[in-house]
Length: 399
Image 1 (tube, rainbow, N blue to C red):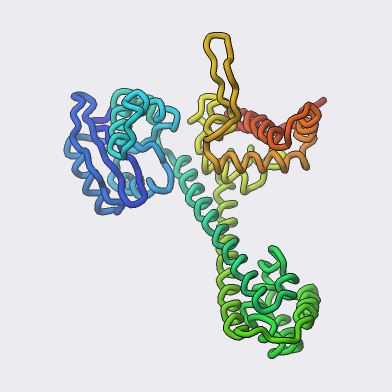
Image 2 (spheres, rainbow, N blue to C red):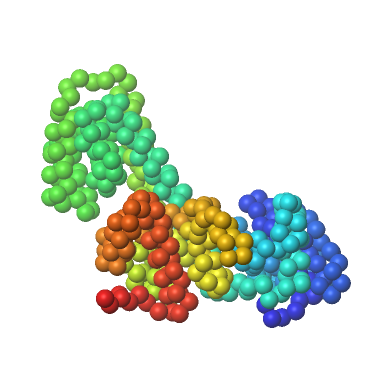
């Protein structure tokens, strides 16, 4: 950041509280050092205290969801805000005592770096705000995904306890269909369906929006499945009530995921870099959104190698002079980013001739499937970095 501020306030952000450390660059004096509650009043009081010593800039190392309220209060108070890139922060921690890892120490390091090396501080812009919103949205979607998986598993267990044939008929994600969940949330299971009768269920289903002839045929198949069992399992009446509740809950979760997907697509439409990334074969909206949410502004990374290291796709090399002692497999890094890049690489083999040719060549050289996917993910990451750096869409290579 070009402007010089009277006070540099480093903040180590946390879920329930932050740690503030404020330094006056001109003197190096530490004028504020303390834990601050993650609340508007707590943050506002701390910023007012810091502001007594002059015009401050608030700097964090993680401009993600946990910093959202902090940034909002800064905006309301007219206080500048910025962040330090992960690499710069890592180097700074080593410089200021790599063996110390506390919230207070990290906040002090951020303040020291902001004070002595202001060029390392990146401003939080409108573009940064989009990344924050996208990050929050994808984080929420991950929670919904986990919840839908848990609810689906619970529903399968309940169905299995009253009718193995019905559970098998709705195997896997078939139970997540709108048809299945609407029927189960209203009628429960075999007993409820038989009591209502096929005719009544058909009439009710026919009155529901989006339920046409295909749904009615599926209903016939469902009644055929429950007809394979004539005995009633003990306790099934109670279990079928639980089935209704679980199916209703899963309907709500899946509806929320649909709304999240719509919001995600709306956000991506506001980001030119999303259009560039999705021109790459095998890279869809989910991968694109996850990538942008985890990476943020590509200018944070000076080159593709640094980005690969952050993503956990760069092998670790031990070298002295011109002698390479060892090369180990990529480890660590951002696991979510690494996972989505490897999955995207797998899809690209199906949709991209270049990726398929590269994969087949690596396999013919004797490399394992996993190694090939890692290598392809790294190769595609290099392309993605170049696309974002140069502002160009993907173009198929000739020859």
